[in-house]
Length: 233
Image (tube, rainbow, N blue to C red; front, side, top):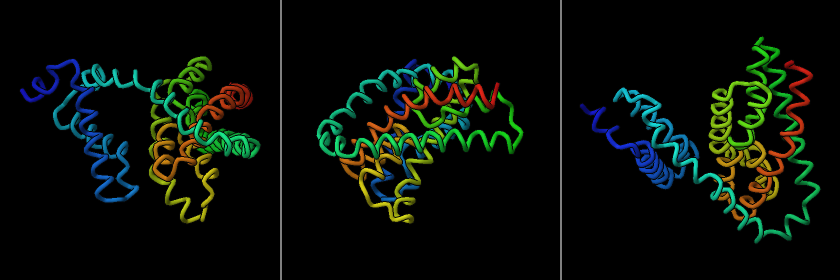
């Protein structure tokens, strides 16, 4: 009965996601702890709800999928802080491109090494290579290379959550205080989720992170097919 009540609306997934994310956001504000990242908290709570009430994922996603329509306009909004910090971007353009390139190369190198160490299949390796770019770009890359899109989506989300949660702590431990460096790390390693954390750190970090998402996506689409053809074909 409860299952039928919860899923009677085709927009159930849409509204429950927004409500739970808002709850997660309030928890983060109250605790002031990076461990309670809204995305991580919302994910855990929603998974728990689906399991407790035996709600099929497809039923939930039937409404939740509408949230994806907001991804593009949300990404475009990142151009606002980018424009405001245009002088800083021009001043650090070489460092930005170099930093993103180093991040992309480090990402694919780690994936290749781990796949070989644990004896994973080539298809799984292909699916994991684009884990540090936004979902739409990652799916386009992995589908062209013959990977598993479900694995790619999971890897992208996981890398985003881990980066968003751990970034402030890593910056503090390693004493990374430079705004451009913080923004580059967030955007290059954890795409949109990392950028959300970068925006919390400051406007400069958010602008640099937003730019890093785009540059990372472009460089990854070039490097990943090459790496895949060498190691996973």
